[in-house]
Image 1 (cartoon, rainbow, N blue to C red):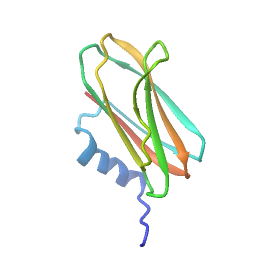
Image 2: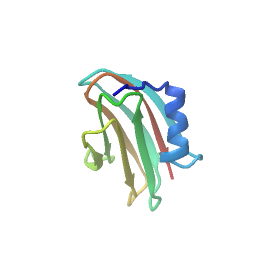
Image 3: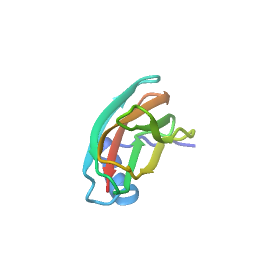
Image 4: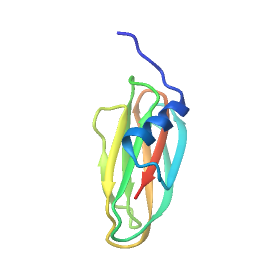
Length: 116
């Protein structure tokens, strides 16, 4: 089977077309090596349901996604063995959350999007 590597621009296009609405409030990109993580802080508003998606540029990796509330507790997680991750979260109070994108295995570029 031939593996295809996508550019980060293509990943962003996929995120917008498939994973999240085009009015995403946060779009970030990054590069991770196995065992590394990137963290992003974002203010989320009470009562709003957010879609959070991270998609890698390769199928030969395992990307995990964690959302921590302002108390440091995990409130949403997708740590399945997959090259992309997706969660929804509806905070009960307005707060700054931390979103962690983790390279469980493999090295890859990724795109992260957060949309209400």
